[in-house]
Length: 501
Picture (tube, rainbow, N blue to C red):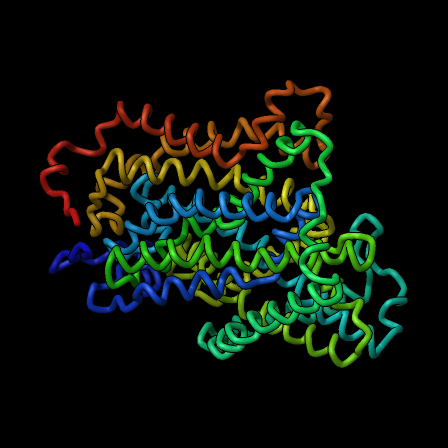
């Protein structure tokens, strides 16, 4: 059962609301259990999920170690996902508005923009995958693409041929943003049918070419000691949590449409861990098979498809990958950051403008470098940004559940002078808690990207980075509660007005 909105909600202050940010009335909430399960199945069936599993194999795990790591990571991230989702389902508000309760009506832009910037990174990664798929197809018919003279600095590690198809695919993404999200519905339907069929076809090929599942699953772990395994396992687990850490924050953007709490709880619990684990199994088997077939592991499915003999088969496969990637990119990596950017200035930044901002920033992160190797994908990208999102999640959940006992005054979330105004719209205690949650992970991150020599750091500081999301979550959440204990921002009389399920 959802909490009813006030019968006469006062007008929102200018700059704090828009059609995208206003609460969804209970009568307009139509998503059931099946919708949320389908959402996660669709979101999980993507090339990065395959690469997530295959990168663990490339990193040294055997098949069951990789699957167990993925299942555990997704089961852990499901917890904050469901907890944050309750607020969206109860009040019909999106993530940027929910963040106003803890960070302030202006301060909410800080977590919203951090989350949006990470979505820009994912947009860049997906766009590179789609663009490189087009390159693999085009170079079969136009071999000269592979030998075009270099036009980018050597430090960019970007060949001219792949750069051309990447930019063309980026333009296509921006064109879809221009048309609006409705234009992507047919592509999402195509993806829902194509990717499961393609995954099964790839699985069949791997089992057939690898002489059955036996030799494939018999591939042993590459770790020579338990210490080596655990040193890879914990940052990998953090990376698995980080994979959906963005959605664990902005899941209210979707659960605000739920017909009931049960719908979003059951739909997500059924859809997320199972679909991620099942699709990852395909990545595990195929990647293990490449070692049996080619003598080396190929963790990128686009590169693997380029090794097939038939030009027509490769062309069809790469076009399909590009189209399904386009559908995923718009649905997963444009909608939420566009809302986050719109929250900064709702009257001036529309959905389309927010989408264009996402696209430009997605170029600037050099996505081809992030997924050039599995260590960069997991340890630099997934673990790195989890150190930013964990603290935000810790603060928001501590605020909503432990301080406010699930009670929010919805009209005042849209007022500059209400209880969520704090000091000129910013809750400095939340900002301080956020900073203290991020700081412990900074030395390890700088060491991971090569800006600091690990030998000059305390080993404990480097080790903390392996648990970046967990460290940030608990440090920020704990400090926030301590600081807010001195701040009478949650009056005792609120408890008597709480709306419970």
